[in-house]
Length: 167
Image 1 (cartoon, rainbow, N blue to C red):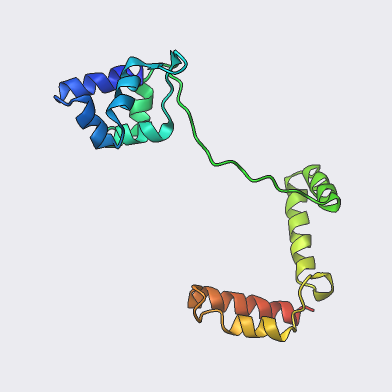
Image 2 (image 1 turned 30 degrees about the vertical axis):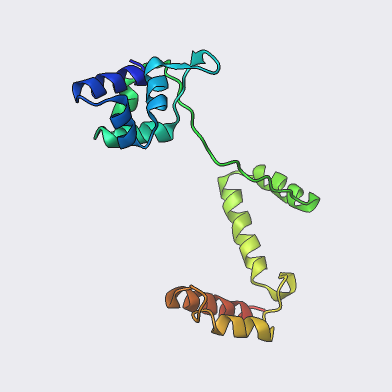
């Protein structure tokens, strides 16, 4: 069964117009019409609703989304919208490190992470000066008007002290 057939069947069974069903779902009457016909009027190709639309329909009809998806034919196309993943430009030394890391097995990867973490606690390898007055002042004022909870601020201060001891 296509989603449009299911929606139409549900709508008629519950005495709902396209407009009222659309209003319940936060969708237009025209969208419900297109959904039920199953054809995109712009392209004349099969219409593919988004997963967000199916979630709305499932919520309004008190149907679990998984159950709704299982009711649909295997050839029912569903669009999954996702936010584009920002591209991160890596420097050449970062690429070398990543390529070397990818060659490791799971045990090697855990060991590499451990060693890099250890290097990050040694001042001569860090980008920040652990004795910087600004850093100490910033750490002491973490819970004042920063939105950081007292508990998280304490963890950050504790980590800073550990870093200072290990330098």
